[in-house]
Amino acid sequence: MKTITIIPSRMSASRLPGKPLLKINNLSIISHVFRKAQQANLGEVFVATEDQEIVDDVTKNGGRAILTSKNHKTGSDRIYEALQKININDVDLIMNLQGDEPVIDIQDIINLNTKMIEKRSQIGTLATQIKDLKDLKNENMVKVITKKNLNEDQFSEAETFLRNATLVNNIYHHVGIYCYSAETLYRFVKLTQSQNEVSNRLEQLRALDNNIKINVALAKSFSIGVDTNEDYIALKKIMEYKVE
Image (cartoon, rainbow, N blue to C red):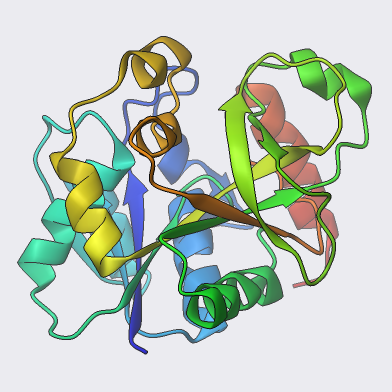
């Protein structure tokens, strides 16, 4: 099966404007994410963005980027436009890797792709154990509740995704990655945004509200997304301390 990875990215993120071009080890966050996707070796990789500065940065660092409309409401809509522009035939799976996940584990990306192929799922994503109960109330950290307890082999259906949560069974920290079957992505972007999606600022709720199943695999390692300046400073310390 043919997979391509498209990374949506834009400068105007509400909580931390300009974050894709913030640098860690002299490389922008978006270019770190691009390299992670390349290292997973699942097929061609592109960044989809509305900003010429991001196109220039990704290209300068050896990647490929597609300039898209500024009118998209969600990352999935941006990915769909990029997919149309790329015009690659016979794509089966589209990996949507969020542009603010520079420390996502390569093996976790590969594992998600494998599970999508094995289970022929509509949409798949990743989650990790919640280590700090304070994270349940952290609205920048999205949580997912699954139907079954996640383990290495499980690819359980998601019940719901939320920003503010209490401790319940089968609740996990959601990791910023999705994999769609091509057919599901085409269907998803044609659906009207649901009220649930808009009020919670979570586009995956549009899928669940329209009976599109999302399966969740357990990630081996915790991935820190960059939502705030505090996240950036913490991640910079971790990544610059590591010997590359």
